[in-house]
Length: 194
Image (tube, rainbow, N blue to C red):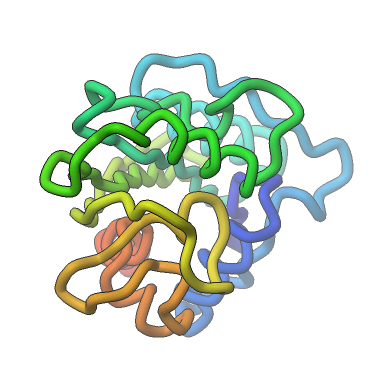
């Protein structure tokens, strides 16, 4: 069994789909009784991902995969970064967060709207062995949301090589180029040796 250490349903679906062909029974932590994750209070993606994977491995006694990801906007000095999930304050949904981001970038010219999504994945085995991998997708922030797919900041993250936002891509196309898809391909190599 491979436990995906997230309580985020969108993230759990995306990860499970990308790992579906591996010889593991992939299960989200949300389906485990007593499931809880440590707060994402660390200063790095790796520390947050390891904290989640360690907690899931301890709780289940199974191989666990934890991830932390974020959006880094150049014009905001790399923010929201490791605090992406809480960007804009409590009570905001995905649309509220990306609208807050667009407001923060309202006066920023197109040439200065560079950004990247970064995903760090930690794999923790029941015996305590740990592996950390990373994936990055470079792009820009649009002036308004586009597309209906994905989740989070996908409607405002434009990926220049495909000329679309992540929310305009099919799940398959997004998996090929996204930060999480890249990190999961690296994690697959780790898992293949497990």
